[in-house]
Length: 262
Length: 262
Image (cartoon, rainbow over all chains, first blue to last red; front, side, top):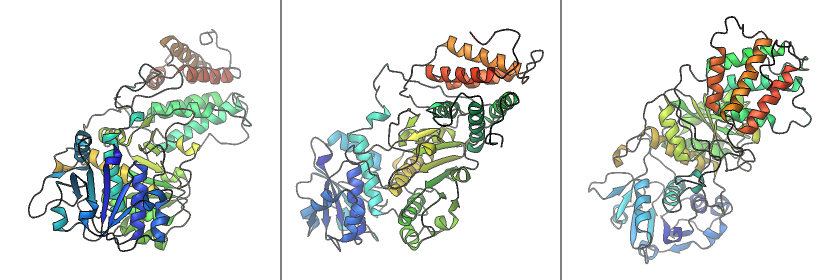
């Protein structure tokens, strides 16, 4: 389905951005790139920034006009900052994903990305069925064009392919799925350093007690880390646990180093 | 609220990526950038790619260790491809947004981004409460690190600030709870009896070590119970913990009864 979507970069000035856009497309499974009057292409910087996406650059179609680039497209979407003088049907990237998901079987979709310095012209924007505006910091809305391709590609991928591994739907149901409840807290959460000291203290003691052999520790500490990170001890719990460990430490053989008792 | 989120780039090789990440952060309203052992910084390429985001670069904190970068952080999230040998609580970027929206008032959040060529190390990933995996083309999952910052920043912005112009409100619920994702697990959950034996074993030992006085035990066991119940240890974790306790017990004064060693 993603092959029914083309990315059209119009009047791109920096070839590095074309390469970065190709790479961004590739990470999201898009492959149809069209370039309207790029300033420099092909170019060594495009190739460098494309990283492993040379195929997309090699098959990118350089077009002399927007008409060329839109050949066969049925649904044209232009990326733009919001609000021109004459309001246009405008989508968020997520809404664009929803439209694409609904219409993909019936459409050939083109998404237009404009020049680095001034975007798409009014004429170009008026070729579009929709405009799409990426939400940004109002004080700094200067999104790089390849980053815009990345974000739009991401929303299109999520809408059309989904993220099966994140399990929106019941994923591989019935297996050892540990659903944890929301939690109320009565003490502030410990910070990363406090947890780290606890875990190092624990590691020192289980080494001293002989439970782990420092020469081949296996996965013991990994499992214990995962457990305590998951539990997210609060400050009181951390200090309780450290007290417990200190009370054990008095009886254990001295460790060579002071690793845990910071 | 976005100021309670820091971006931590670990071992970044190309200074251009640091600049591009600063710009990506700025477009999404993030400003706290920490760099753990960057190969080259400051650097002219970082400045060039940062475009109008020199302020973020100028105030970026260069840290000698991950510990430094995590100072004061309470919720640590590491970007990673999916599936290590020992599964870890893993979020999609959108789920991360939901967690951030619910927890932002109570947390200082750090999001870690690893090296260009090999990401975060296992040790670094094991410092994280959650891993977050950006959904990508399975045939080309090589997302640029600044692009990853852009996508995560986008989801965090949408979740915390929303996209008011598109009529999409932020998802902030303002509740004091921690939403954890459903998890695929590698071992079945322990049952209540197994957990109970663990807790009694622990109680026996902290009595033997003198940490609690059986005549006036206070709330120590209550807190420890709550912690372990919340963590919901699986069977392997329980057996690891019992092994740890048994290794300590050999050195502790004998308790009067055999309470814990069933």
